[in-house]
Length: 187
Ligand SMILES: C[S@@+](CC[C@H](N)C(=O)[O-])C[C@H]1O[C@@H](n2cnc3c(N)ncnc32)[C@H](O)[C@@H]1O
Image (cartoon, rainbow, N blue to C red):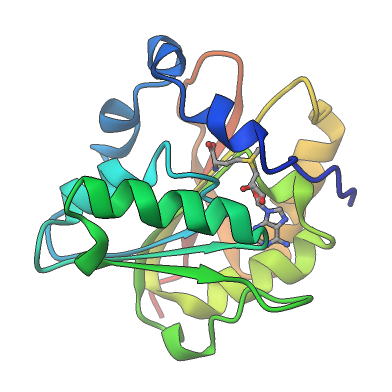
């Protein structure tokens, strides 16, 4: 798998309000996120989705957002603080070669992997770590951009997820995106 990493300054473009015309975070998240959930968001950038996840999990929920770029995490924390949502969000810098999720084993209800798996050094490693953090029966929404990711590569990511024990249960329709809703078996 490749690693075309998003430059930090693109983080500002990704949070542009104009993007909401194509991808509405509230509508995308609503089918999956409930109050009180623990939600994992790898590669959040500056939080186009994170703030909405934090709103939807409510004060009793928790968001763990893990990014490898310190300036993305700094921007994300600033925006969360301004919105009064920092207390329910754990915005972390990923350690080298991992997402550093050992403390989350079996605790995550929902994972959002939006436009980020193609940036990971290894999709297999990514899905193995995500699957370990997920509760039995939990879901992961995988979304990739067709510009950067060819169809075959997306299907290779889905296969890497299957190897980690995450099976496809849906292909939600989303404009200009490849999508898969993946589920960890309930036992
Ligand atoms: C294209 S951006 C997408 C950001 C956000 N998910 C969105 O849709 O607006 C990809 C993000 O993945 C992060 N990223 C790249 N490699 C990573 C890694 N190894 N671990 C965690 N995050 C990573 C980048 O820093 C960037 O914030």
